[in-house]
Amino acid sequence: EVIYRSSYTQYYLLIVGGLTVVSYMLHKPRFQISQKRDMEADKKSSIYIWAFLFVLWSYISNPQAALFLGDRIWLLTLVQLLLLTWLAGQLFDSPSKHRLLMVAIVLATSFSAIMALQEADIGDTFGESVRATGLAGGASTTVRLSIYGLILLSFLMRSTKERFYKVAGILGFVILVSGVVATVSRSGFFMLFVAIVMIFFDE
Image (cartoon, rainbow, N blue to C red; front, side, top):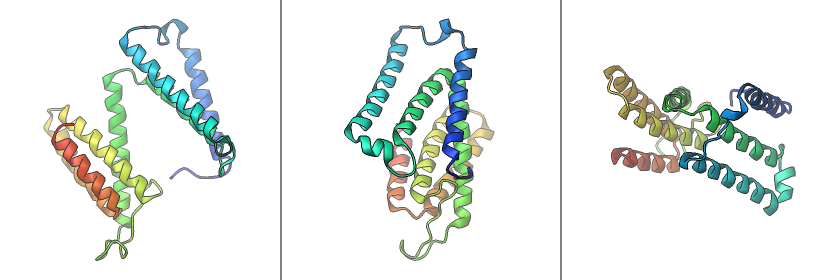
């Protein structure tokens, strides 16, 4: 939500995304692009097939909504997400890159949680409380992102043995849980409970 919004923003992002895909295709030798036919490659291709079928079903089931609902063309958004899924599968091809992405998400959600804490005004009841939104633009979105951050942070903490990162992870946990509380979201509290149970049982 920190990105400036105008009627041209979505076209600007579309152009940047399109140039990214074209640049990748031009700089990646054709013989290196997912030529392996092992089990992992089959799993990857099945993800793309299911994603394509979802986009197709979204259009066939309600073409009016897919093309003309609201202020955007939702079919185009779904196609962009399909391309983004494929590009992410190509670029994030190692555990170290996965961890780097996880760290980026945890840092971003933690920063959003800190912003949410400054907005929060928790009263005696849910109705009297002011729901914080952080940088996500909505309390429900902030809750979901904070929960994602918690799950990823728990994985990162388990995959390292260095004391500094353990301590930093505990601090991150406190910030993210506080961010969920700041939204005063009843469904958020339930999701937080489920997430903590899953983390505790190493799921």
